Amino acid sequence: MARIGVIGTGYVGLVSAVGMAALGHEVVGMDKDENKIRKLKRGELPFYEEGLDRYLREAMEKGNLRFTLDTAEAVRGARYIFIAVNTPMDDDGSADLSQLLSASRSIARALDDFAILIVRSTAPVGSLDAMVQVMRQEGKERGKDYELAYNPEFLREGTGIYDFLNPSRVVVGADDPEIAREVMSLYEGINAPKLTTTIKNAQIIKYASNAFLAARVSFINEIASICEALGGDVWDVAEGVGLDPRIGRQYLRPGPGYGGPCLPKDLLALIRMSEEHGHFPHFLEAVHLRNESQKRRIVWKVKEALGGVFTGRTVGVLGLTFKPNTDDVRNSVSIPLLTRMRKQGARIKAYDPMGRESAMTVFGDAIEIYDDPYEALRDVDVVLILTAWKEFSDLDWGRIRESVRNPYVVDSVGIFRRDVPKGWKVWVVGRGETEG
Ligand code: NAD
Image (cartoon, rainbow, N blue to C red; front, side, top):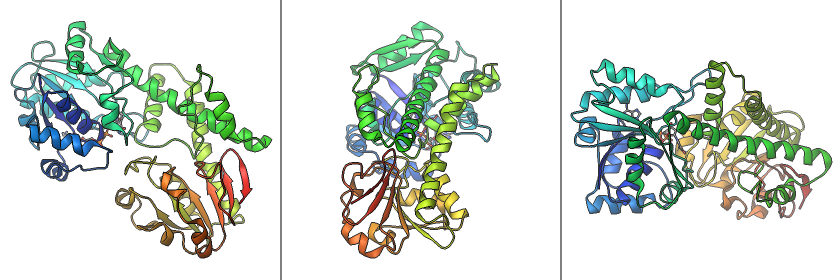
């Protein structure tokens, strides 16, 4: 079994650390965030991920997983160093490499023996060349002191550890096939198609996969609007289309637009990356523009439900996270949508089953966030559903009707695509207005 250091214990790094420990490797996870490491040392998760806590505690009790704030402790004695720091979106849409480069510098300083640096962060073509430069500035030569590999992560937040242990595929890119095979051997216990390729190909695989998922969402949102115009029902249409095995049903769910920490930033980074190399990807631009217009469309629907004005009106919002079963609000569509409504004079009262704390750090005092959905929806002029949390359909909508000013729902995620609660008027994306 191998000794692995993991730099960055966010969603991807922690799942990788816990997953590799579950496969029997000896893992040391490192993060610069003191709060995160303090919690992890106590066996507590710093964010919500279904089932991850059980695996975390099991590995820690067995003694093959521990955590540190010190890069040297994670790096020394490790032949494999996973790097899972964030590569957020820069102002111009390209990937911000500062965390990746500063992590590389600390690793170079701590490196005392040959190691393979395995990048798990989503990192654009060319970014590993920048890492090599940083390593060289610290006196470390590729091939002699270290080698590089790129091992993209395809997990979905909310089911991260399940996806790690049951992946659709494992992709390892390295410019030396021997290194690629060696890194792939870390995944020996995993039963999935395994692809070794070059670093560049592995990077493009990651970006192309997310661009394709984004394209599917924009596609079905386009069909949803066409259904609204023609009097069709996109929920039946999507099912009929998705049953074709050449198409499939995944990511054919209409909504307020895709958001979250991956799809928007990765699509834009791919666009920027190709523009920098002389190709202008009009198709990908269209995917992005369609997503922007879907968000505006939902704002417009809410405004229409309010009689054309936001000023002096209260919008009750259910769902702030970028999807259900996570507490992550990074790049959630709730942020631009609610900001736009607030700037036009609306008061926003919101509820989210798990995203309350993270949403408070994003929105501050700009919106009111309640820990009770019934309180959030009291005295509102319209209800807007933004995340498809299962529990929203189970609320007592009869009780809510008694406390709102107007029983109207803008359902941007299709919670009420089958049944509309009694006494309510609901606009469902891709189907239009129905009375219950
Ligand atoms: P994250 O922000 O949750 O985690 C990054 C962690 O790295 C943080 O805990 C941060 O404190 C730490 N960090 C930053 N600089 C550091 C340094 N120099 N030394 C040590 N620790 C440092 O991000 P994430 O969601 O886990 O994403 C990480 C990468 O994986 C990104 O490139 C992302 O695009 C990619 N990715 C994310 C997902 C996802 O669902 N979140 C899925 C696939 C790929």
